[in-house]
Image (cartoon, rainbow, N blue to C red):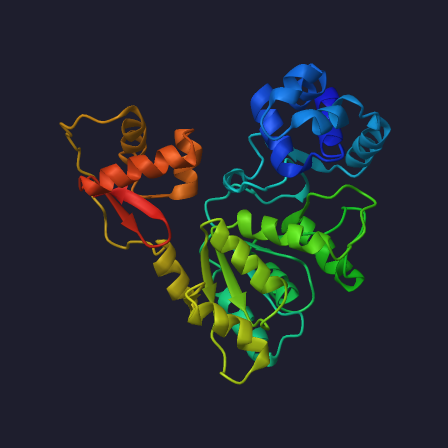
Length: 366
């Protein structure tokens, strides 16, 4: 296990490879160790790798840095999550540029059924603070995990309110787990370790450089089912996160603000340009995501379907027949089919009136 972890960390250190190629190599060879042991000729012929990247792999020697990271992981009881691990956040597997390796410390299940991200300005007004606190508090009995970036402003308010209401909350960091940025959130970060957790793709001794934050934002977007924007200027990390979420086919919601309020200009822009759905309360989120509990007793009826399905359609139907409804990400995970195969199967089944789609990328038998 430690040997494979050594190769997993080393894979993220190779120059010229990056996340997309690293994942492609692991998918091709089956493991990080197999990537390093592959003949150069074979590496040369893999699409996207070529001679330069193949040389980078074969000439890589800095395994001592990977060994240092393993010692850090062991000392501080950090959990490494590689893309082939069952505990790796499965939602991220559907994001083409997700990190192959994450470092995690906490007790929240990163594959929980309902995960939402709350993001917003670092310089919030009372309006944003009040909305954020009320919104998070009303999620107390909804069994959600709240993800944010541990920054000043809306991020911190979301984390603190979650803890006060016994809601698990996870902070995604733009640096290694050997520090907290901003330092003023150190006490909050310690609380989160027992009421959620801290997650990062960055190794120890990585400082919070400016270029790290867009990468952090893609994890916030990719790990969540929905992204809630509460107060945001027309520029900044919140809008980047929202754009990334749209690119990942996630649901994005935004609280509107006054037309002349610069702190709400970003939210208003997202709503105006159909990049986010307008939201005013928790009820809006639950309804749109299909998370509103049906209070009436639902009686399942045995279905006898005398229709000839393709292999992919049969897989999807078999899963849906055992559940009231399912989110598209969970369907990807349970079916073990590619996202394109699932999308094609769902389209054909919907056209035949066998499957119905609900708001929030939820599907059920019609």
